[in-house]
Image 1: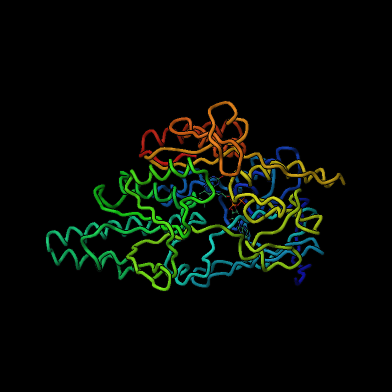
Image 2: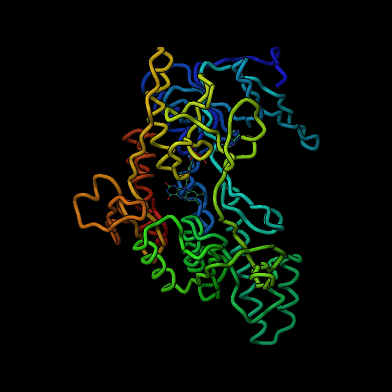
Length: 473
Ligand SMILES: Cc1cc2nc3c(=O)[nH]c(=O)nc-3n(C[C@H](O)[C@H](O)[C@H](O)COP(=O)(O)OP(=O)(O)OC[C@H]3O[C@@H](n4cnc5c(N)ncnc54)[C@H](O)[C@@H]3O)c2cc1C
């Protein structure tokens, strides 16, 4: 990597890149423990708790899901924050490069040049993305759910498409050609395609039956009933989850899978297995069946098939990575053969014991590194990170919360055998809902402190009591 010594303006003892579930918690924990020189870098200026992205996709504003500005948190706890996008790491020089931000001539917005920051220890916490798996048309025509911007895009396409479809159905019923013309114009030739087939429900196709696809299906189903949604409550929508394998929700226990399946079906959500999507086009998806392929109408396609690390993982030299585009780390979360670089969360993988890409893992790894980094600075031997699985919990909007708790909790009540051999506790209803809230509550308390954290929890509870019943983590 080219060095930019002239631009190297400021160094930090610990630089954390990525202020998500793991990176932000790490910055706060280090600062709370009295570490004076921590620099957090993120490409955005505010943090949104990713497990609530489906709520944004279902129409809630970012502020309603507790968006937090990094600068305020940095001031509150005493670390530094800088907005920037990582584009290079130079392990030898112990420095990173942040991309230049181009200026805009039209409104005289200034350009920000490339910045270089030096570190004593670097933590990479860049999260993950949904891979397109080389399927034609995914990036052009499907929506992903990786960021708040993605979620907002889904919300806009869904609500607009649903309204347009509703109007088209009215038109089909009344035969009012003028209304049809207005609707076509309003869509501006949108590729939603709803107006081309009046008289049928708005078709949502979600590709992938992991937790993201399943929760999103439940929330979109509920979204049309929201009091502030543009489309009327009786707008018709059909939601289908397409799973490529023969198993719905591969990776969860049989009991949990069954419980979720039943609840989704009761809501009228279709689940189809062994459906390999080969192509996404405007208004349709192509599903391969042996040598044949079948085309199916799809007004909105959400691609939720798996998780890999970000593209930059493959672009940085000197840091070993795996096929899922994650940095390989030791059991102590240190990048291989790099004593000063660590990685956590979705962008990292311990080869000996891969972990699921969840906020739980990222958060526990942040807790581990908050103690490990200062220890390593003192020259102490590396410790081993141990994941304490607290279970899998899903919120299915009005269809309730279900899940299974791992670890100590499961020992106290009746058991069901999990598919990985450990005993899991099946939880449903209010208990599941309360447990589900736990992870974000813990995150909020850590980031905001007890006083502000409690205020946030109260206002969140009130919001849900007064508004439509949506997912709460
Ligand atoms: C819709 C959805 C629902 C989920 N539900 C759950 C759930 O119920 N329970 C659960 O445990 N997990 C859930 N997850 C998974 C969980 O959100 C992730 O595993 C977790 O957020 C990973 O944390 P992280 O710190 O690794 O990365 P992230 O939280 O993804 O944070 C990465 C950060 O890095 C920043 N960044 C990325 N690239 C750059 C760059 N080049 N330069 C600078 N900054 C950069 C991003 O802006 C972001 O702030 C869900 C995920 C999604 C998408």
